[in-house]
Length: 232
Ligand SMILES: [Zn+2]
Image (cartoon, rainbow, N blue to C red; front, side, top):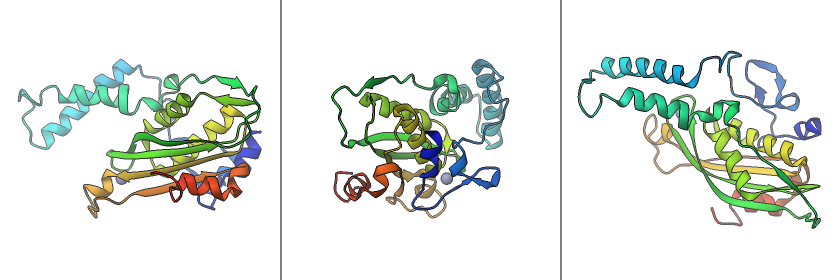
């Protein structure tokens, strides 16, 4: 099953390269973030302590007075936010438990979940990516609780990311859980690294999409997810 999903996986029509090994493409692998093998050897409490120390240095280097009442707890605040909140999706222990239900009513049409809000973080600049996810799947033997689709989006968002990878990871996870490769994922997001630095283009957005199985050729569902037929 996993192979048939991955074999048909495309990102806007093109296979994408696997990080660190350009000869292997998405056709052969589950797309992962570039984590080291020892990524979770340190306990969260130690990570918070270490990040706090480093962030205090950054604040000092910028010339800010770390003893100022407003700033003195910022290093610890940032460290806790990194580990416990905005990057918690890096750690597999925080993966949501998702159970599926038997498709006893034999529902075989696309189920479409629109406007799932997410906040991720650009791994190139560590600033937010705000967006919405539109997701569709055609059930086979199993259906998934709607809120679980939101939790999957949230889990993979809470990492330093690129939007292309996030799109594929959500699609692969959903395909694995529901054991169906009839899945479509569209993300429409604005990147703070575009709006608040560099070209400073406020108001632009980035659309990524991945469709597999029957949804690869379902123009109606595609147009709904892409927003040309539905509310964005
Ligand atoms: Zn960026």
